[in-house]
Amino acid sequence: MTLKVKYFAVLRERRGLAEETVEVEPTTAGGFTAWILREHSLGLPPALVRLAMDGTFLADDEPLRDGAEVVLIPPVAGG
Amino acid sequence: MRFSLTREPITVSREPSPGAGGFVTFDGRVRDNADGQSVLRLEYEAFDEMALAEGQKLVEEAAARFELVDADVVHRLGLLEVGESAVVITVAAPHRREAFGACEWIIDQLKWRVPIWKKEHYASGESEWVLAQASPTEATDGLYDRQIRMPEIGAEGQQKIGAASVLLVGLGGLGAAVLPALAGAGVGRLVLVDADTVDATNLHRQTIYRRSDVGRGKAERAARFAKELNPSVDVAAVPEMLDAANAERLVQSCEIVVDGTDSLATKFLLNATCKRLGKTLVTASIHGFEGQVFTVTPDGPCLQCLFPETPTDGCVDTCAVNGTVSVVPAFFGVLQANEVVQSLIGGPVLMDELLLFDLAGKSMTKLRRWHRPGCRGCLGEFVSETPGWEVDTVEEAQERHADLQVVDIRELDEEPDGPVGSTRIPMGEWAGRVPEAPTLFICASGARSGRLVVDMRSRGVSRVYSLRGGVHGMVERN
Image (cartoon, rainbow over all chains, first blue to last red):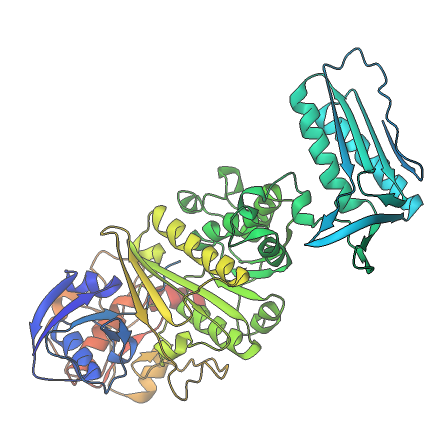
């Protein structure tokens, strides 16, 4: 399946780009998050990164839709 | 200069005042309707002694404030028919501007400060004592005039804002933008919490502070700023760091909590405390040109619903490490203040959404949040386990593995030296490499080592650890 991935905050910095299109086997929100963090050595455990699709955060076991735009949100601390 | 009360119809005589170029008279009369009801007559009563004293003080204040040549105020008491004068204010000033201004100021202040009550007798045969006093918000020199004009706010909304109390935790970049907006809007009580002192590196973005404030307590300087901006706001300065010991007491003292901190631990602690005590929390965080903001209401999804595991400070960097520019905290602080205002006037808030904004690209994203079943944060519990890959001391890691090696991953020129027995192998040399023995990685703050260890663990390397707080943390502890 094809996913358009958007990165925010520290993930955008560590990945070095704001968005990209990736090809993956059909997967869930949790499975994809763990894979992409590992794939690009983004240095955050999957439990600390949330994934949203179609404007809603997903639970880890929810499936991703082919062609969807997904957003990855890390914790943000600055104030 | 005289304030008087009379039970007879008011007659006004103007004393000649050679220095006065402008005389203005305000004649307040009995109107034949009030709140849609037909009014036949009015009855005024006063607590004479107090009304005379306060009225006289008011006239003298007006004279000093507007540099009046003369001022005379007469208030009628007793039963008045429609069309009769209830109060007549006459002022004489050198110029017309001061004369008009003084007249308006006196009538606003008089309604608020002077103890005079009125009873309305309606055509329906009923009668009712009504508060002759205007709200305090109308008596502040028109300070709130422009916002009361907004149909969404009005006098009623202004009353709600004036009756509210807000706890502002963190008086850095976000807090310094939240404060002027809330003090200006007239939030009744502001409690300002921060243990820090003003540093020269704060001034470019924390514009409520002056260069002369450097080295002084933020809470006290911020309170002074708010008081100067709007003396009618009750401001309290709390020069403490919010922690588990004082969180409950501080949060309990206000209705709405605004999180302007740069600590993940404090954000999650505030979240749990607000949930436990049924308070509303407005939280925001910034990173580079981006930031996020949302509101946790007593019934809505919370921060812990979003992140069931509390991230440790150091897993992502703060402004002190990443850098920041004035516009970003200013923008998000104002969005936080807006959440407070909306919440008070019953407007929409981000109660089940998270708003992301990128100030570089000018793009906004709203993401829907939901209740996570069994969320401990919603139950008011502060979840703060140290993750398995992080240790607080070198000894803690040594207890787990006798053959532990300690590796300092800072660059070769970074100071101070790592702990005795550690080897320095910079971060860059670890790409794709796996340590042969159990390893504790250390860096300056714990951010780089945490990132390296998390990455190794995601690849199945298990016996690797990161020292929380890094070398700086060790130095501070010693």
